[in-house]
Image 1 (tube, one colour):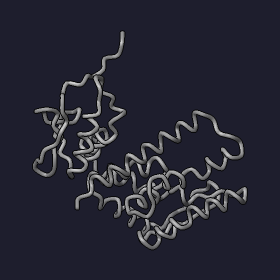
Image 2 (tube, rainbow, N blue to C red):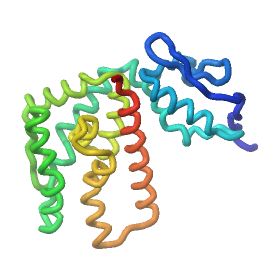
Image 3 (cartoon, rainbow, N blue to C red):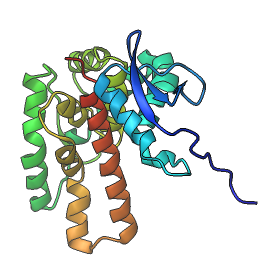
Length: 237
């Protein structure tokens, strides 16, 4: 039996002002989340971009081609009901941040990590007022509780849409500092992706890379770019 797939039922996807933001219209129907919750977008830009995703669909609806729609659904159905828990989960990445854990050898990898990561460790100490300790090897290093509290405050201060964007910007690279650096404009998403892959790229240079690993890395980059786009489109003013 073939898998059932949703088909396009609308002619035009557009947007209209709504209380608290904007709604996407599929002809005369208001777009809702899969769970039938209202989907009110915070900015005209985000609503227009989501409407464009729906307008670009052909006969069959392909959810994978609508990353902003999927992110908006997640914001409403998953992040909003457990905002504090999501913020706390992301803040916990600061305690085991990728940038804090350095190689013990070879020297070329140690230098690459220092060149790529030290500026962001310094930025965290100054801009975020959250200095993180670094260690060489895999033995856990205890971070200053005051620094972790400040990092949690930065995360908790985000709105629903910012927290939703930050989720992928943190969990995919494995670094709270990289994620916050993107939303604060210190680096962009491609740079965050590159910095998160210093170890992997070094190993690929030495031993070669396989097609599956390359494809997975490309998928992670696409997801990070989408999260960065959600961040910018959801900003008011």
